[in-house]
Image 1 (spheres, rainbow, N blue to C red):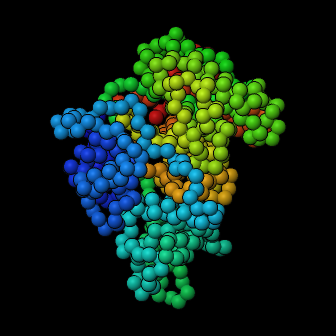
Image 2: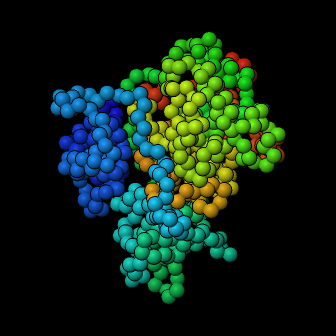
Image 3: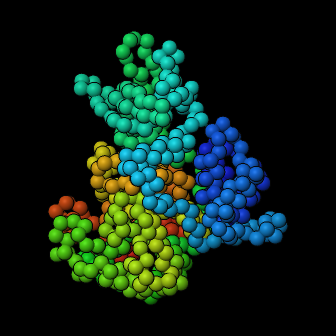
Length: 502
Ligand SMILES: [Fe+2]
């Protein structure tokens, strides 16, 4: 596995235009959180500094030891012998929630959040050949003829007659309006407010003309990247939106899932190869989430709903390692990134359950998984022409292009004003999993496996009213050594294999 994690780290530094020295890499691989440390190194390193040296890693690890206390790492003897790093079945790489806001004034706190987003995404865009002659917005000069900028999109408007786009882009130095011609490649993918893009510009010498964007460049997933692969053919099963406490919880389908995982149903050999369960939020139905929800509830006390969650997860074999993030129905602050559930709600959960923040990035057998509930579908689907809840993986592709899970501020997804934007997708995952849409979608994009995990709740009155038709009781089972996928359908009884084409 060391080889795979090594490749992952080298690629990660390459993406940020850094060369990592062999000694620095070795030291990083000996740490128990190599990707978190790598990200911190990139954030702290100077812009023009092309190398990551062993001294830089040593300095940072020493600082982290001082601030966090003793961090376990691979014993030095093992490091010296260059023995392969042991693959850990589970490693937490990053949680989106980074603690409460530091600034007390909301405007300053949101300012810090957007500044952090700009810095993280601009870092990915800098140095691209498609963005020649990069310049701070304030220093753009018409006389230069051409230049490139990296900006956060403040506004997108259309010209009344020809329907060209006019973008207002902001960077740390100022703002500029640019014209994106209607039929140009830059206008082909919708541009959303608050995403960070690069634009290569050509200036007109005519007075009063705004610059024209020749190309729009997004942070994106690198086109050629080796995907992390586990050394052994163990599998993970992906679920979402259990909604325990709802009258519509699919007790029977869940029973078939329990039987399957206990190797009492069809495909016992497949069940025996599963070590991990990932649940992408909405663990319980909650209370007061939508109007007159009480009519849909079988358990109207939220503490009792989590007790029921504990009982249901306790039905699964206790050899499984279960990872879950909260969703918008769970009893935590709804602003994203959401913190993990509080201890008073999780104390009844079995000991093999780990509750993380939403979103969270972790490695299962070395395969990097980003789990996000998916509330931002509610903003991205109306904003992207042709997007729908029936095809959530199309929206997930856009998230990867933007390298952001929920860019739009001020609409239905509340954003928490944290000093670090925990919704930036960094590092690039091998698997991106979401829920929320209550449908089932699988796809691949530039080597990333996209999963919109299915719900275990039948259609509710509220969903009928909103024209949402769920695709419940499907399970995505992924071989972590090859990322090959099997989809099982539990909606009609014991599981049947479903063809998905992904
Ligand atoms: Fe849900």
